[in-house]
Length: 204
Length: 204
DNA sequence: ACCTGAACACCGTTCAAGT
DNA sequence: ACCTGAACACCGTTCAAGT
Image (cartoon, rainbow over the protein chains, first blue to last red):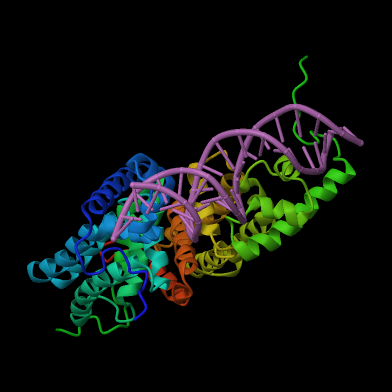
């Protein structure tokens, strides 16, 4: 058989120095991204990590791959959080609380919301997959709220994902706008309520 | 008196070649920005215009200055449009129609909504001033709608500006999201309605 | 198997030299 | 008064050469 170039450590355990480099890059990337935002210079990350530029690219072939590694934990927690809220809170409150927490998370790094929403249209991005899990968790909360007639039936999880990222994006653009985030969030949440002519009290 | 460097043609009529260059740059910029978006390469604009890079910077010292020149007409029309709607339509419909048209305009170029909202926090930007006129026109429609109890009183024109740009931004990120723009617009517009406990029928 | 850094093709911005 | 383009300090990405 022909020998494929083989991705880093396909199956086997990675070499110790490779593992060290990867961890070091991730550690430094967290700092740099916190300072400069999601569009931070990757060159700068490699430089500060004391690592060749090629090494960074070997471990994280795209910027999205690096961001995904930085955010993986956070995303997993948010997905779990949705399930916890589903049992602990009534449907409408569960959805509202989760969306609020997601919105705050999407504003964790400057420019993050743009990166997240942009990957909706790019199924190849690792961020696309990472967000999918969250959207599904969000979708379960949404369905429950819709079943109870608390949320209009013409919205889906992608709508909520887009709106939550948009609210984080607004807060991103200027400090004076960040102050408005929670109020605008409430406004959008109100917009999710069924309209007057809708079957609003289907459960009664 | 000391002789100040003097901005291009301070007071006097510009030299004919300068005027030609400025027009040429603007013409080409419109094409390039339509193709590449608001973050298009200024180098590319100068190149395609057959003009030195310094000439572009002389006429348009910042990217925002160039964008402002590209959008000036459009912005003026939108401000006039608000006043026309104010007399031709009932307040709620006037506000809704205007916001919708503004949202479409903010999506005229890819990346434009980001440029517009970002300048809210930068009073030095020529786009800041250009948007101010529109926000004031929008504010008049908003006040009328609020006076009639049709819109919650805790929102201002900046909120509407932020939300409209955010909707344009969503549509910007992926074709599949663009399809949702009008529906999401309607949802946000519904969110502007006064809440249940509010003095919704103050005019009755 | 992994790392390094030069090489390439780009940016935005400034400014000395020209006309 | 205005124009030009080289110069500077950056990018992201690739890949030959090393260990």
